[in-house]
Amino acid sequence: MLWTRSAGGELDVFHKLLIANRGEIACRVARAARALAARTVAVYSDADERALHVEQCDEAVRLGPAPARESYLDAEKILAAAKRTGAEAIHPGYGFLSEQASFAEACAAAGVVFVGPPPGAMRAIKDKAQARTVMRDAGVPVAPGSEGHVTPDAALDEARALGFPLLVKAAGGGGGIGMQVANDEPELVKALRACADRARASFGRDAVYLERYFPAPRHVEVQVLGDDRLTLHLGARECSIQRRHQKILEEAPATAFELPSPRPHVREKLLHAGLAAARAVGYANAGTCEFLLVGDEVYFIELNARLQVEHPVTEAVTGLDLVQLQIRVAAGERLPIGQDDVKTRGHAIECRVNAEDPVKFFPSPGRIVRFDTPVPADGRFHDGVRIDAGYRAGDTVTPFYDSLLAKLVVHAPTRREAIARLRAALDAFAVEGVKTNLPLHRRVAASDAFARGDLDTRFLEKLA
Image 1 (tube, rainbow, N blue to C red):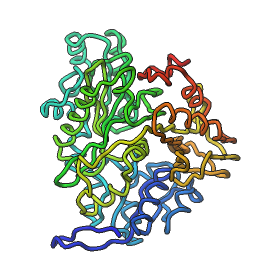
Image 2: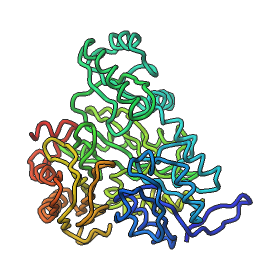
Image 3: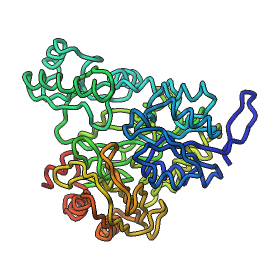
Image 4: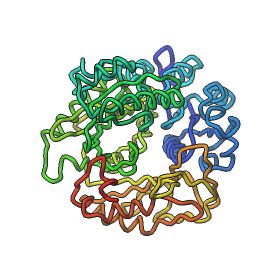
């Protein structure tokens, strides 16, 4: 049963959770809610009327036309759906409204529980340039960069002081959008214009800042979880295998601290920085602190105020259900564990199976005529393999949303065994009707560099 605290402090039951998302994460949240004896409400656009997440919920409410701004990004429609169905809580998943402090505040004003961090924490880290200052003041290491936002004229002065290469980044960005490398002043001028334009189109504001560009770092992150009194880390993940600054494969624990040789002191430095970052903004619920690892140095990138796509690898090695814990914390419960209770067992790897060209990475919309998974796509482990899916055979992949079809997760006692299990599972995964990146994942899993743990953010470039 789900619980929330009333204004008087006593515990009251609520029975219904609205899921303000779609695809595999909506299905994932629905499973967690059912395990807590809550009824679920799906919302859907016209393009998703027969989608899997609609089928897997107890009720469903139409939001509107296919474009996200007229459906999944329309906060008023989602709150109206919660009111109409009597849902006492809303889980936003990831993407869409998940990191919008204004939406969390609107939920509170409407008397609906927002399953996520406090709006104040969200606002403190929403602007990435501002977040750098907050983290630096809290003792969290940040990469050399500009002091806040930069104008084109000021950027040139900052760049001369910092030195090239530099990364121009959208202050309100995410998912690798609004980022561009500049190797000299002419490239910087072009990058500033391009990133500002992209940021304005994607996030509604054109503020940008500068950060030192590291050509081939490792990308590591710390899963944090907190309530109103306690903040924990649930270990580190490796997310170095990316394309266009977007992750496609993740591991837990982070390979960076084991291969080619153990570096426990660097791992402890990372975990300490992750907790310091979360505590600096009064963070609660689930979140992820992302860092670049350059040699033995860690540099803060951002704090994602939401559930991450790659959360299943942390669940696999800790045995914790992060979505259930999210819901319980949002409902007013204390975390049922302490830091000493968090144990890591074995190794887990996740592949994001996207509907896209495996070479050019262009989206591949269309009707799925075959969707054969190596184990049932029910979000549970079967002999060390788990599939979290948002599609099935007969479904149509539209051009309106993210191209993620499913997540393939494997878990085994050792990384070597996990890779072997991954290779077998990838060979047994078959999708027809749309192109997918399964061939790319098979190449990665079969490569000697991957087996050695020789990873960085340019891994795919070198694999090609």
